[in-house]
Image (tube, rainbow, N blue to C red; front, side, top):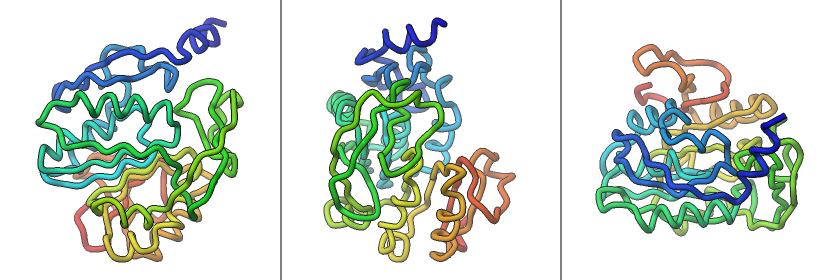
Length: 257
């Protein structure tokens, strides 16, 4: 099959790809080693829903935390929507991908919000944990304590990484109006370390939720009086849902959908 050959060819390969015009057109440093779709020159085709949600959910001047930032498609789309008066924190556990994020941040035009990059895992406690680097693409990297995706093809290596909590990040970074989470099966761990953030700051959440985490994530968000929606539905058609779905939008009770 040709796919395994392309995946090996993509290892550690770095290319520049421009964000779509509605996200400012900045040329990011990306790698098809994260996902083969990043070979495409049109980044909008790589994840159109992500760009649409950034435009919908981020307002000028916002602070946004992107936990599991990967190569930064959402982080930099959010940075453009937030503008120069906003702030973005991109948290990425893979230090190699974090290096690409820093290069993209250093070359971003002044119309973008500053993007701070933190190479760390986010979990329910501050600790040293193990990270599996996925064989088929770094977008599937996951903590050894969780199952991760069935599409990883195994892992090429395991390395120790530093884990922090979302509540701990409040001591070092401005609090977010929007929190995006995509952590490959560690979303319940992530939210268990966010009690103060959810109770006091009450950001809007955009969270990828795997089937194994549906019950735990739903319990945490309902306990903190969040209303859940399917982010894949157009905004005008969104109705509250009882349980998290793959792409869950969660807003504090009383906020518009």
